[in-house]
Length: 134
Length: 30
Image (cartoon, rainbow over all chains, first blue to last red):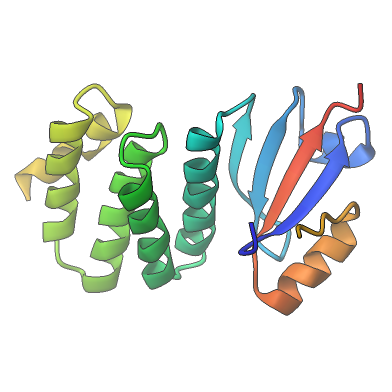
């Protein structure tokens, strides 16, 4: 939590309309310019909430082209919470971040192979399937 | 000790100063 600035707002405040919030709890990760990068709705147990925050922080870095930072955050998520619901998207985005850093297709193929092995039913495995051809 | 902000403007200012993202939590006041 020390890696973020926490902001708590009642859902009946005008800011909720600006962010099109329809249900609580809604958690949104913003960059410090106020741009949204990740959102969750509903309750998570701690073992899912923390990896979800790491995924959101990784997406803030990824969307800002800070791929080295994104890789660190996704790898931390995958090391500490390898079976969490956030893990498949983290594997996918970690592979893309590595590709963006190196322009080598190997990390994309590796991401697909890990997804296929660990999360064969995930939609992220489906999204990465074309990388099997690299 | 977590210091929660309650205003977006202050959170963004703090985020920019500390180079950190913002965790925005909308909750039901009940």
